[in-house]
Length: 317
Length: 289
Image 1 (cartoon, rainbow over the protein chains, first blue to last red):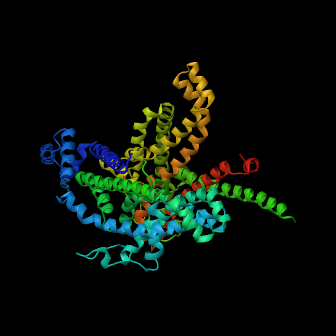
Image 2 (cartoon, helix red, strand yellow):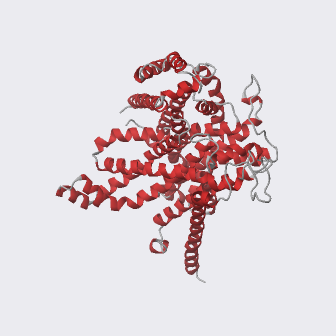
Image 3 (tube, rainbow over the protein chains, first blue to last red):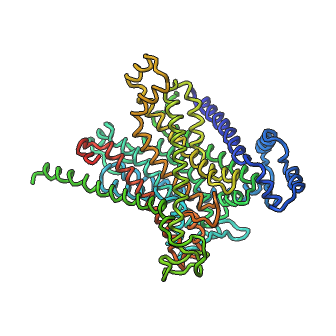
């Protein structure tokens, strides 16, 4: 299979997956259509008012029609209008998503170098003191739910000593970069949990490679230390490491909801959490679809990147 | 002392220390589970009755102080774990049942027939589990059953994958092929040839799923999904009491500490079990099986 056929197949598979996920999103949120009506019309609404609301929201038609309409709109870049405040969903996503992407990018920028260095250092001498320290540390952190980690960081750095702001308020009309101190705690939370997961994966892969005959041969030739790690082990560990980081990026999607909620950071995750709390079904569906598309795109990219970085995939396959 | 003898002593000492650590971890797990399950019976006060000012420190009659509405914190901590661990246990049962049925069936199927189903399973595994939770909570607001279903479905793909792998390994064995050739039914095959060989893996897998399920169930409470106030819930308590952490940190720290201790202890136990199974020491590595 040549390279283009491979790309094309992956793209088609990704598109099929997105359609399947959109069905899951729509099905899960529309299981009980009555709830959206009572949420909008209020608990004291009469039956006529409820019927009027149902008609206005288009909920009187059958689910298949509504799904096709929603999916068709999504293809044209129109995700409908939220119940609350009647904001177009695409507008909300457009306003909030960049904030979350900034958070994720900064967290990745911290995670990647730390995880690669720690994973290599631990995996090169499996069972040594560095390995013990790194493995124990990552095991402890990987066990913490993200909201506990966020709360502990908040309590230790912001609430008590007051070193950092407790609430990540973005200046009106500005971007989060105008007040960089608000980014520290959210990024730190995402990075710490990401580092714990990624380091474990990279360490395991490095330890496997470090035990192979060709590494032993390199050692016997007198190659040691950073040169051995960077020139001989890293190229073969990169592919799996990229895939591991792809998984971490996927986890950032879920982590963003928690972290943005804890710190009150105005990103897509907090918007989603609030939409769920107010049962704003179109907003929930739209944000979920966008997040799924992003997760699939990241997965596709990391797949391609891992393939390109794999030293064995030089020729045609 | 010769180097070899010294090496032997070090090796002999290491397992003993590891086993002590494993016992401490097991004790912590049991303690947290005990508080969660038996807490409501031990609690002497109502978890929802207002007994003092908000965020009071520990004092007479209120051993841990009060929470953000002036309710007895000790009673709330004792009541708050049952829902978290209950939902997590239900979700684990669901995930393991799905994993067992799906994994064994897919493992016994031909590669070509199983492939499309595994694609769907992988897709569900990629889906962020928190997103699944939020979607189900939108469809059925305030329902603990929806949280349980979402957590179970989020955990199931991993169970299916693990159980399918061990089933395939077992099914490649000669006695399974003999049983097939003899004309045994698929049920008999699964029950008498496959199950005895995969039972250990299934149980270990259920343990790992349980930790993940506790994470998700606690996070669900923290995000306000499932049954709402005034029921006590360790995850939600952290959120509710965060604003007053400077006045009385206990309402935030205690639930966080319980959840953390449980997760870390289970992870260390799982690590210990994995090391013992994979350990090169063979017989000396598993004296306390």
